Amino acid sequence: MQYPRCGQGRLQTFSGRGEIVLLLMAAGFVSGFGAPSSPGDTAVQMASKTLPGESVVATPVALSSSAEPSSPVVVEYSPVAIDSLPLHRPSAAREQWGSSSSLTVVTRGSIAPGQSLSASLRRQGISPVTVDLIAREMRPVFDFRHSHPGDRYRLGQDPDGTVLDFRYFTSPERSFYLFWEGTRYVARAERAELQSQLAKVAGLVDSSLYDAIVSLGEQAQLASDFADIFAWDIDFSRNVRPGDDFQILYERLYRTDDDGEQVYVKPGRILAARYRGMVGDYAVVYFEPEPGRGAYYRPDGSSVERAFLVAPLKFSRVSSSFTTARRHPILKVVRPHRGIDYAAARGTPLWSIAEGTVIFRDWAGASGKLVKIRHTNGYVSFYAHLARFEAGLRVGQRVAQKDVIGYVGDTGLATGPHVCFRVQKNGRYVNPLDISSPAGRSISSDNWTGFKARRDMLLSDLGDSTLAVADEAL
Image (cartoon, rainbow, N blue to C red; front, side, top):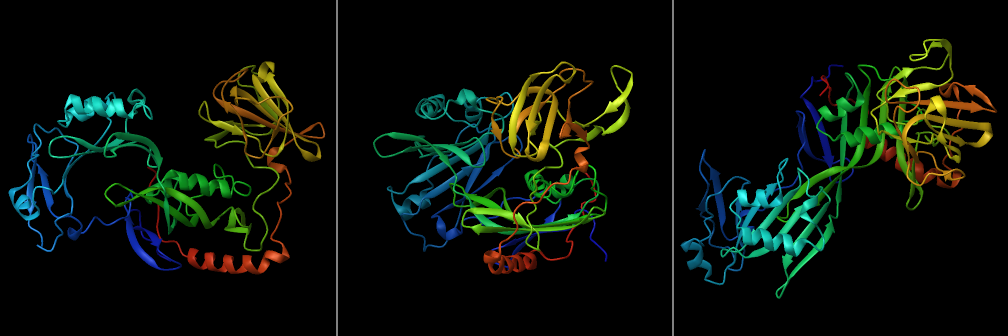
C-alpha cells in the first residue's frame, strides 16, 4: 500500500458515529473549528485592515436592510499599536437604527514576554484610566502582577470608552471575567464548559510516537495519553520502530468564546486506539462496566492494566540496564548493577509502579534521596537519586499505582539527573523487565453483551487503515 508523505495527512472529525464533518490537511498544525457569525447576526460589519506604519482603518460594509435595529454593532481591532480609535458611530448606521443603538469596540491582545497588562493595553491605545479601572475591579479575583506571557484578553467598550466587559484568559479553559451589571461592575473566575466532538488521527512513525502525532497537528498531550494506555505492554522509549502505525479515535474538546465561535482547547478521552509494529499488534477500547467507572480493555475483554507498570516515569533514555557486571561511572570499579537507570530531565515526576506501602523515605548514602515501596507477593521497589520527595509523602503511607512519590534528581553518587529503579522479590534483586505481572479484572459475563456492542462500534469507527505519514521529527 502506498501511503501519502508528510504534510498530506488527514484529521477527521465526526458529529456522530461514522459521519465525516471535516477533513484537515495535517501540515504541522490544526486550528479550532467553528464558523464565524453570519452577516445577519450583526447590524453592521466593519472590515478592518492594517497598513505598514498606520493604525487600523475601519470601513463600513453594506448589508441587507433586513437587519434588526436592536442588533449590536461590533468593531474589532487587531492587537497592534493604534494612535486613535474611530469611536464615532457611522452616520448610515445612526440614521438606520437611531441613537439608541449600541456600538461595541472590541480590543484583543496577549501578554508578551517582559510585558505587563498595562503596557499591552496602552500599546493599543487604551487610556490609563481604563487600565486602572480594570486592574482595580478585577483585583478581588485576579492580581495582574501574576500575569504570564501568553495570557490573552478581550476588552469591550462603548463609543465613549466606557468598559462594558473584560475577559482575561490564563489558559484555554480558565478565565476571569469583568462586566457591567447595570449598577456596578462584577468580577468572577470562570472555567469554560467544554463540548466534545469525535475525531480520528492516524499515521506512521518515523522517529517517535510524539513527533508523529504532533506533526499531524494534534497536541502532544494526545501522544502522552496514548502512551499511558499502552504503558503496561509497550515501552515507547525502546520498542518503537520507523514504519510502526497507529490509529486513535478520541474526543476533541471545544469552548465557545465571547463571539459565539468554537475554539479548540485540547484532546479529551481516547475511546479506541491501535498500535502495530515489531513490538506486536495492540488494540484497546474504552468501556464503562458501571456508569462513571470506565477502563480500557483489549478486544477479547481482558484488561490492559496490570499490577506493575513497565517504568516509573516518562524518561528520555535508558542510561544503564540491569547487569551483573558494570563499570561504575564514578567509582571506576566493575560490580553488578541490579537495576535500570532511566535518564530524564531534573524534576520529572516519578510514580509508584504498583499499589503498595511506603517503607523508606530518606537519605541513603550513595543512593541519595531514596523511596522504597512494599507491594504484594513479596515485591519491593526502589527509587534512588531523587531531587526531592513528593510533598506529604511519609513512611507507612499507602500509594496507588501512578501516584507521584518524588522527582528526578542527581543526589548521591550520580553523574547526571536520572532515577536508579530497582525491584526485589522476596529479598533478591530481579530485573524489573522480567516481572510477570498479573492482569486486571476482565469483562464479566454480565457485561459481555454491552461490551461487545460497544467494542464493535468503536473499532468500526477506528478503522484499519493508516491515513497519514509523519515523515519528519519536529
